[in-house]
Image 1 (tube, rainbow, N blue to C red):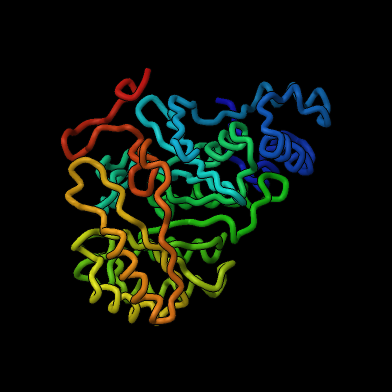
Image 2: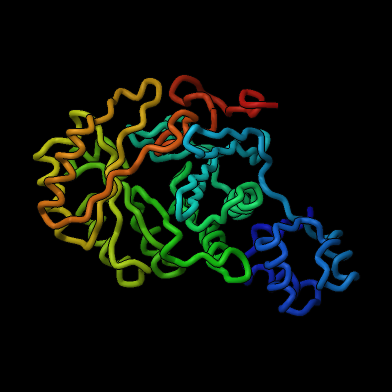
Amino acid sequence: MKQNLLGLDVDGLRRFFEEQGEKPFRARQVLRWIHQSGEADFSRMSDIARPLREKLAELACVEAPQIVGDTQAADGTRKWLLKVDSGNAVEAVFIPETKRGTLCVSSQAGCVLDCAFCSTGKQGFNRNLSTSEIIGQLWIAQSLVKSRISNVVMMGMGEPLLNLDNVIPALRLMLDDNAYGLSRRRVTLSTAGVIPGMDRLRDECPVALAVSLHAPNDALRDRLVPLNRKYPLRELIAACNRYLEKAPRDFITFEYVMLDGVNDGDAHARELAALAARVPCKFNLIPFNPFPVSGFERSGPERIRRFAAILQAAGLTVTTRKTRGDDIAAACGQLAGDVADRTRRSGRVHLKEIRA
């Protein structure tokens, strides 16, 4: 089987070339061709000697996931459905803005965490994505959008900290000046609070961190984010403080989905402010994006405004996320790979149910 070079960071490429008896500097050359030029054809890598190009054609390939769906929302948000194997597809979303373009990337096919308000979690978990399947989303998007992708958020399908063996090399490619050259401050990983993964990311490849909080106390968070039963808030806050020792930003972003009558009361806001006093943080309030049989409703605009005002009165920085792409199910919490709800059926889901 040919080695897919798309998923190798610079260290991986150096090892590959050394195994072929080639000089390590070839890694930087090929990295630039693949990720900066978007080139998948070795014969067109003109500054590489022809014998090596021919050898690469025999031994290696550059293969990204296959696009099987490409939809664009009225607000310009674009969503791709990407086939990663015969039984799984994932989604990536590009969000254009005036001064930046943000790509939301998936790390798993499905998700094991089953947060109560998230459509992806209802799909169940199929498998981790490989590094080539993760970075391939950026590789594809950069070739198809006119504006430069300035920010990447690992907030798509899956829990990235449960797939760090593949996520960390993908992050290193995003940061490498010979690949995408993004700053650590412009790459954000979102987690529900997998504490061992937070500690490993801190030590190996710290980027901006967002934590899906969604509740101000353990009793409610146990219900909304089942992972909290394993890693409760006291331990999570301690892990956030450890992460900040090496983080590129001096704060953690806490994401908080606004669920009508569930976690959006004044008392919740005051309790949240007290929790926030234990770690440098900012809050991103997320209006809930509905999906079938979710059982939740979105908090009203005035309720969200009041909730934010209580947090701001406590001296906290608060933003409210603008809902983008909800008309194509590309908004936060809606990504599900067009896969049937796992709660209604068992067995593997086949791509023929998506598109042949």
